[in-house]
Amino acid sequence: MATKPGGRRRTRGEIETLPSGALRVRVYAGIDPVSGKRHHLTEVVPAGPKAAAMAEKVRTRLLGDVDAGRQPRTSATVAQLMERYLEVIDVEVATRAGYDSLIRTHVLPLLGSLPVERVRGEVLDSFYAQLRSCRVHCRGARGLVDHRTRVAHEVGPQDRTPTVWGQ
Image (cartoon, rainbow, N blue to C red; front, side):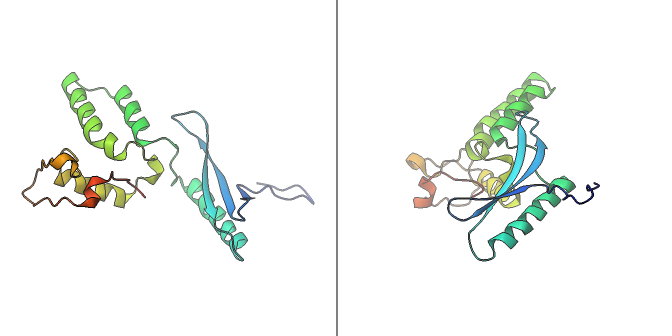
């Protein structure tokens, strides 16, 4: 990209100061194919003496992710993408019913509200561990225990709270 003589080159991305003093870095990442809206990658850098330098590093990293195509191209949730997937697949009726059942029973309750960009390896590892241990995701509710394995199920306080994936 050429610059004008005596002019400045336009920078990509923006760094904005929030009321708290923290800096919000925002980089354009293209059009979201699901919603058709502009998609931006954002990250907040905490306030501090080195916040400006850190924000510039974050902006450079986000721009690198965009340039390399490593960023998600959508801000959609897993549920939205699953719905879209079921609209476009071309499979037999029985196969579609099976997919629909698996998505409704396992994917949506555990991952449905999660933005796709937050689905990482550790989230999937935890999801698959849950699937291996309990097919109805009982989480200790009403004393219900229904497992695929012979491993003992110990119900504790953590089993009575809903799982929040990716946090």
